[in-house]
Amino acid sequence: MTRPLAGPQTLLRTLNGRAILEALARSGPRTRAELMSATGLSRTAVTQVLRMLETAGAVAPAGVDRDTRGPAAVRVALHPHLGYAAAIHVDHHAAHVVLVDATGTVRAEAHGDFRTNDDRVACIAGLVDECRRAAKGPVHMAVVAVPGAVTTDGGIRNDEGPDGGQFHTALTATLGCEVRIENDVNLAALAELTESTAGSLSSFALLLLVDDGLGAGIVIDGALHRGASGLAGEVMYLPQSPLPIGAPVVSDVVVSDLALANDRDPRAALGDHLEAAAAGDEAALKIVAEVARRLVLIAGTMTLVLDPEAFILSGDAAHPVLAEAMVRVAEEFAPLLTVRFLVASFGVEAPLVGAVREAASGLRAMLFTRVLAA
Image (tube, rainbow, N blue to C red):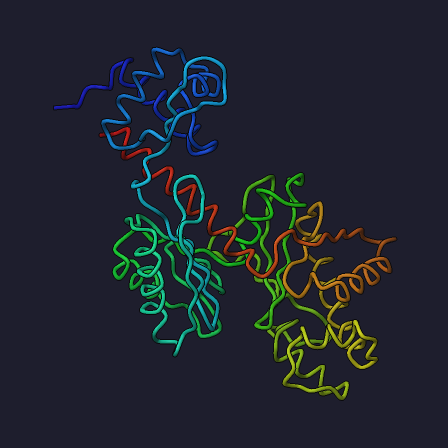
């Protein structure tokens, strides 16, 4: 037998319930009068919906408002035991885990190094458990920022090839909750999109340069562009003369080769050369000039295809010495092609910032759907 459609009252109650839950998630504890103002609902509707939400365990009293005129009014808030989402930033050496509630507030945090490449899942699970014990609540979902291209099914493609979704499957089974895998540079771009210098831009590309290489997060008309197979933004391998096809344009190996060619320590990271260049070291300045030239050529190539409003420089690319060198190189091409650079609002933890916001948003959608369907 076909299930009948929900009646008008059921639909109205669901819509009103979501409006109140979103208002509490966005603004924190509120009185009935404040919820009426935020949602446009009548006092009767707010009272009825709050009674329903309290019965479902979604909201709870949160103190009394004694600051406004008239009788003291009880504030309500999202129930503190609704649970959490984990935002996780994974690089090649360590994991950083943050638990957030439905309001996006950080409730616990832990960091740990990987002993071997094989213990990543166990290490992450241990950090999540550490946070769970501190926050005293269930974890309903996790958003994980990882280096490498991420396919639509959560598989990771890195220098060793695709993992076939093994990491995603293992982490989901170990954590016992929904797990979303996302490219770290894409999440860094989302962080910039929501609240940053790039917040007023509808289209931009974030260039994140770290020791392991270069990646781009591409935003077009306000939406993240991942590509059909998750390869959008793998700009480190864009063809660039006189480099052979498939060679990285900028990476730790490239920096090491440039250091050797300029009589500097090939074991030093790019950041060390940048600091030396800032101090006036001539050999380091030559390394910076070559890296800047390569990055501007990448930005120019992307401009001819995507024509973004600006490029957001993150990681080592945001270092003042390198950023200024890129602007100088770009000025040489200005008569032919305009390329605009801005410095990112977030530092090395930009992927984690993006993961936190995606985790909070996903948690709200999951919890509110569950509550209102009960």
